[in-house]
Length: 346
Image (cartoon, rainbow, N blue to C red):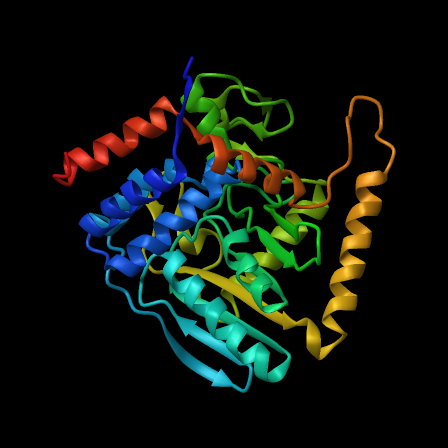
């Protein structure tokens, strides 16, 4: 069974940034993509952390993603944007789109950007949380390679197509929701597979559509949706927002888990909402504090210690990991070693 090692977050950031620079990215872009991955690990979202580095290096060096891609605004009507990602990594395209949306929301009160020509963008909280320092609400969605079936089916034609929303608070940690519409993600199952342990019941089906806890069979099978038809319905909607508005690919147009994605076909959708355009900012943020405290004060059900507002547990984990270091599996660290060796950094 795999065991974890604790790594300093700052040292990890520098290490991953160097790998992406050696893969052809400029310093700024390499730092951005490294920061997005380390931020995920710091918050305990290891499925979208530096586990992804070998896959991303392959995309940048062998599989057709443009390491020097430069996103641009391709179409604009007031606060509405279409962004062409220039086949850059999704982190670069999605971050560009959110920054453009934030600037326009400061002028118009609300702004939305649809992204095409992008690739895998990692954890969505990273972009939604960009809005918090500007007293705005951030929203981000993305399409994903098909790993689910529509409710009642068994063909792998639907992505889990997650949604993230970040809402600023006053004295409490912000509300941060980031989740796909499957019970778990393909990346999380990869973590279990690396560790050699079974996945929890209810996470996945095998290739025949039968429930399984075997991580290898889960990876080749189907992810289970949350809430049955509700989960697949929400995944369809988020996928359409992330693809049809910009002309990006939807579902099987993206590729598949066997052959991999088609470079530059991913799409994202981001939105920024300026709280001050609707309400007094301090009053709004104070009311968010009140909601968080009410949730925290809720009497726990049997088997639970307490209730958490969305993002509160991840906020606590991030604080602990910044102080004590980030736990990473031996397989993840071996992946970084392998990238450094292949790129001449060792």
